[in-house]
Each structure stands twice: as C-alpha cells, then as structure tokens.
Length: 442
Image 1: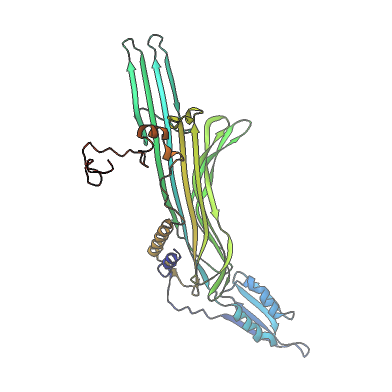
Image 2: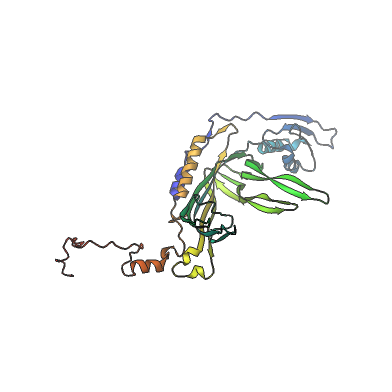
C-alpha cells in the first residue's frame, strides 16, 4: 500500500512551474557623502535604499545593529524604504549588508490530499403482532398486540414497507356483524453505506506569512430566546467544510520548516431539543470537527501523511419481552434486535514544494482528481484498514429457532445450514451409483 501511495504522488500531480528565468530588478540605492565639518568630526554618508523582497519594518532592527551607535536608521513603511545616516568608514559594510538582507525568498506550495472513507453495515429485525375484535352488539372494538419495533419505527399498514413482510392477516366475520382480525408482520432489514470524502486544496505562502483556504458551507438552525414577554427566534449558523492553514517558518534550498493546520468539519445529524413554549422541538445540527496542528520540517517534494484517525464502532440493541422472549420455541418472535458496524478512516496527505521563482505556478486539475480517486480506492481496498465483513449477524442468528429445527429435522439429520438432506426415493441409486440392494452397508 505504501508503494501504491508513493506512485500516486510521483510526478502525475506535480505542479508545473513556468520555466521563465527569474531576473530580480536592480536595487534602488542612493548614496550621498557628507564631508567632515572640522578636524574633530568624521566624514559621514547617507544611504537611501528601497527593499525589494523584505519588509523594511522587519529589517530595521538588523540594520540598526549593523550601523551601531554612531548612526541613525529611519524607515518609510509606505514606500518600503530605509534611510541610514552613518560614518563614511562603515559605508561599504552597511551597503553589502543591505544587499545581503534584501534577497528573493522562495515560496512554499502545499498540495493537500484529504481522504475520508466511511463504511457502515447494519441489520435490524422487528416483529409486530396485533389482534382486533369488533363486537357488533355493543359497538366496542378491542385491540390486543405486541410490537418489537424500535422507538420511532412504525408498521404502517398491512401492505408493509421496505424490508417488511406481512406474513398473513386473518380476517373473520359473522352474520351478526362481529369481526376479528389478526396481523403478524416481520421486518428484517440489511443496510449498508460506503462513502469517500475527497478534497484537494492547494495553497502557497511566503516566509512567515500565514495562508488560509476555506471551502464549505454554513448550516442554519433556529435558536429560541425566551424573555419575560415573548419568545424570539434567532437563526444561527454552523460552519462545515475543509480548512487548510499553513505558515512557513524557515525556507532553505531543499528543506522547509512550516506550521500546518488541516481541518475537516462535517455535518453528522440533527438532534432534537424541546423548545420552551412550543410543542415543536428545535433541530440543531451536530458537526464533527477533526483537525491537526503541527510544526514539521520537510524536504522539497516529500509526501507527508498525517492523521490515521481510524475508528470502528459496533452498536447492538436488544428488545425482548420478559419471559416470553426466553421461551425455547417461540422466544425469537418476541425479540427485536438492531446491529450497526461503523468503520471510519481519515487521512491527510501533504506534498511540499519549494518554489524559487515568483512566477505563476500551475497545477493539473485532472491529475489531481485522478490521484484522489486512486488514493480513495487504495484506502478503501485495504484489507487491513477495512476488513471485508460479512453482513452483520445477530448473536443468536445461527441458532434461530434452534429448538424448532431440532424438532423438525432431528439433530442427527440437520445440515449445518439448518436444512435436511432430502431422502432418496425408494429404489433410487445410492450416491456412489450402486443400488440399495448392492450396497453392502444395507
């Protein structure tokens, strides 16, 4: 898998830097020498210099240290210029220092590949039994029954719904108008979902400059504010999406030290909360927030994997009628179960590029999209990260109606799958091709 990931990031999605030669503009420097006023004073000089690649306010402290106590340093931040008054004997040293400080700085391009794979498998079993009796003489209708469905799940009608089987309704009546109705319904659902969330933000930053990229949307929800006189509804928003923030701290020719903070916010669900003064609950979005904040040193062209936030959840709920659910023959009819297996893997891939030229940097969107798809398939197909599970089975599913099978097939004749091997007709050849009369065992 490591070789597969390395091949995905080797060259195919590499940014294309324009090959135009970068020639820095000539520095603007004005030098004026001031002769000595008398024999006791030293000749002086004034340097006016415009910084091309550095911020003059950040370079001021360094220049003051070079000039020393016998000179003065003033800056013009609007024009990014510095004015130095110093002794003439220090002129050449300060001039060389200014040119050394004002050098073009490379930039850093971060190609981020964010992959999240979510797998969900589930199964649910519910039962509903109802008996309705109508007495035409008194006009009374009595209904008896039991249901094992989860809270919020309903067996709507005798036609059933998705995954629901109506075994039989028994409807009887008499000439005097009495009516009886029996309904038995079984719901057995197998659910599955497979999702890959992919994103490929690219961002460029200068030395000690913070660059941020945000993509996503804001989810609105209603919030009620209760006062002594009225209830006021206010709309608030929760942000979802993918954010990437980088800050290069040190850039060399082949290595870079930078601060990286990738973040992914996803809407999970809506939770309902009671609202004061209203019977309608308030739905509030629940957002999952996953982020990484780190400072690292990486080489030019190096791929860094961060995250590995793997989680596996298994949830099983059992609903059983006391005593009836423990009966050996029909206990499973009074038992309902829900089982959900949820696997999730989140990975951040970062590829670092040092850009020595300030000219335009182009990326290939088709290559990036192809890399992301291949990366998602690579992670999804890993037998270690995501084991190919069979459909979730209930703890007692292999022994479903065990007493009934034993009584119907017999324990010595029941096959492992619970079905009896059909008996051969009388006179039919044995499995080895011999007739029963030729078979020495008989």
